[in-house]
Length: 450
Image (cartoon, rainbow, N blue to C red):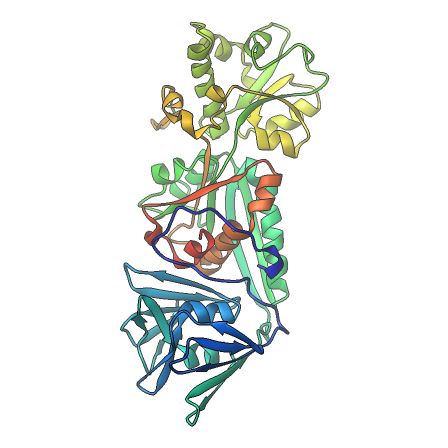
């Protein structure tokens, strides 16, 4: 969350505004002065604009929540449906409700305010003194000039806070997820928060079933197919999810693969059907890469107009070459036990594998072909029917997450600052979409997708 890592995101949600800069570190002090009725303030000796003038209510100063969060190095969110205002800082999160004198700190501590937050000219205002003093800052009122001076310097916790986050994710996400985890851990280490990740990877069907069938408590669930979250987790185990990244299906091989110099995107199926060729794919009942491979076989039969191709490819696959996770096939390729393996493009990139790029009609990487992809379907052993669709990764936080507020912070960090890690790994971000809608997801997560 450093200031140097800010990047812009194209987002689909335009009904509310999130304003923020990256939280500042320990010795960055903020000194400011605002005057009642004026549309400018002095912050660290610089004159800056305020979106709406501060006002006095019940003897307290109310100031724009977005301005205050931005000034102090935090983030702001406003939900017009619930009329709740959220201010997020490194070590505290404030939740206010317009018209209510109750405030919530860190989702658990309730405080009584001297004055209720309000909305003026469409801008939510919050009590300045309450926020700054709760953060450990100083506030001084000058009656003669009707102005407020304040100072605030973020500080690490005086006592180490230990936090454990249980993250379960698709195997294909291992590299970018662990990179984001390490960055998140290092950031909070400087604030005297020790983040311990219990990281687990599996095929995405198995990922969701760890929660829905085995009843394991997880803080964050991330799948290679967003469809699996509403199918298995909502509404019993989660109430929302967000789509955030994409990928493509490819055919991986090595220099020593049979017919490596001959195979192309036009003849791959002919090569695979040769008797001296071994190929594999992920178990479709465990891993979306597996059922996407079978869906691709179906589409190939239609696309190439070759009746029976689907069954021919199924029959040519040896049972021992079908593995629970697609990433397990990488070692078989590298040791030349397999000639070819169907993988995500990201897996090929991360493992420096050669690969054949399949046609857009077959790789599930083109959103404009969603109707074509939907011509294929596959029924899992548990009766779930999956249809061909563009590859979209999804994530959620289960309702019983053991460390929910820190899970929300981690997801916010991933969505806001993980773009480069995922792009490098071959899983670029897409325009974020939240379900059931943008205002049904946690405010802290919503900050991450603005």
